[in-house]
Image (cartoon, rainbow, N blue to C red; front, side):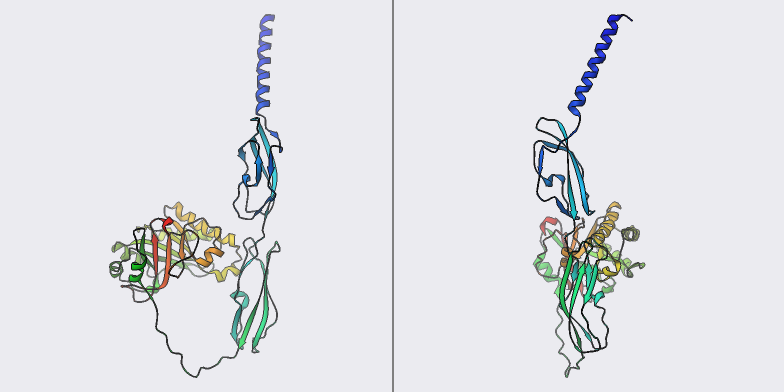
Length: 404
């Protein structure tokens, strides 16, 4: 090879090397926190959704890549992002936030409890004490009382979580001697909600009116239910026999669903659950899917958890219970159905804070003031409709959830 060719090759290699160096220098990511300023508050309440940008006051450039915030774990958390500065150079910014828990345990406590002389009362089991983060907050009752001695006893309930968030409230326990009345009380006239009145007062082009039923309604004449104006029915497919109990199909499920479908009523189903783990919730959802696979289910499959008095013994956090509901609903969704959550207004506001599903609202009033979104409203539990001998729940199903 001639000397001239060697020089040319050397020059080409040098040019390539210089070009590569220039490209590297232009594209390398340099650590630089000078191109942005942070807000004063660098904390985040646990389980609260937030983005990295929420903590940046000003930035001279544009964020092009960022790390995600883990809002489920308490403590310091380092966040990193890549941004183009004002000179269009890539820079790496880093800062630290802290995930905190400042929420007190949730305690549902009456001002007064009562028991007859000589009759024991388990106050702790009567009072729901749960925490958003801890599975088992400290829940204690201070003060003395004697169930064998008549009187009013002043007590204090104290609940504390692992982050020292404390709930404290005074209440009384009344121990009383039973009194035999001189006369029998005058029976009051039974009241009920007429299905026809609900139709007249609430039916419009954006909703449908229906009922939800279980074995407690006994034999139902669905032809009369249909003729009365109902267009759908939510049917209990089954229930769980207490915490860690077996699943039992509702004894009227097959009869109810077949007769409802034969009368051209839209059908959805619900399951009364005591699920205390995500594994249990998935198992329940799979069980339900097997029970309904041969039927035309056009309305949602509902997770119905109402055993809040068992939360203490279940040792579940509020977040943990929400994750159980989410697991049930996600399993239903993956099977091609629509999973939803059932809840009363008070529990939706206080307990179901972290769920991600549509809501079947229970609120027995003429006009609900629940502020969350819901696709169906259970308006009463004392309904009367042709075809059912006793009381039944009446529901309003919204064709468009934005119309509720």
